[in-house]
Image (cartoon, rainbow, N blue to C red; front, side):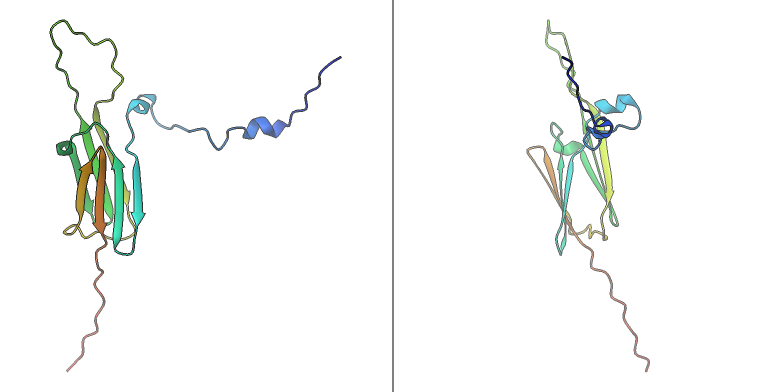
Length: 139
């Protein structure tokens, strides 16, 4: 007795089509960590949470230019070895990582704040109040 299996030709085509990650660029960049960012908007401004595990507060830089926010950070390698020690395997990434994104409105950089706790950078970015057009009264 033969076992017949009914297969839909489109089933294989669409299987995993929407869930597989697609990588562009060189394969070496796949080893570099990505900065994971959450951005929330409220009526007064934006809140940004960026995951930066293993990075020191002094090695994080935030730059604001109008509506564009840039975050860069560097994880430095600890190359100190004790007598008789040797490195067998290193999987941790050391180097620079950066991320830039544009928000919907200019940021008031004079009132912006940043806090770094437990590997998470929290930015409080108030919206800049836009100057209202005024009409001059002619005397």
